[in-house]
Length: 178
Image (cartoon, rainbow, N blue to C red; front, side):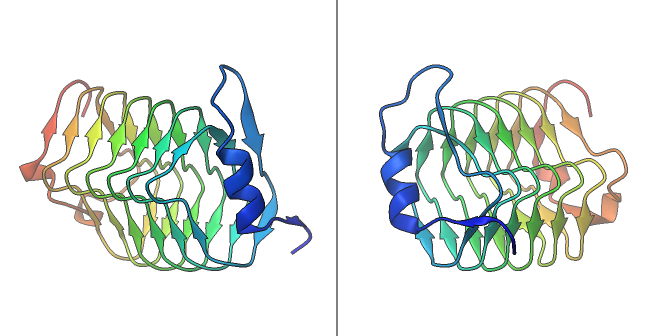
């Protein structure tokens, strides 16, 4: 990889700065070679677009107070965002999940975009709350995404993603476009 290397400590330090409107920590196009655990943290906005995470990423119960961009990021090991609160837009479009990806009971208060993402082991979205629109259009899912118990208030976009790749929609509540 040709991206700059970022350490877990550097990421934790910068994301722990007080949130301010328009401010975000720019970690775009980085390589993170060690495990990253941001669980139970109150974090400012971040841009991890194009970043490669070589080890586990755990953000369970974290609160992302600003934008949360992971566009085109690669997660080579487990990615866990269970019960995470995204106060603004959560962008995972074109992200690549090489192993398990968990977003169970996450709270998306802005848009949640997973368009054109690739997930080798599916993605768990069970019990999510999406206040803005939730989109998983044109996703490549080697195993189904689980959406059981999801509540999507701003619509659901799935254009180009095969229905058999989405499990649990019959147990979800969707308001708006479907």
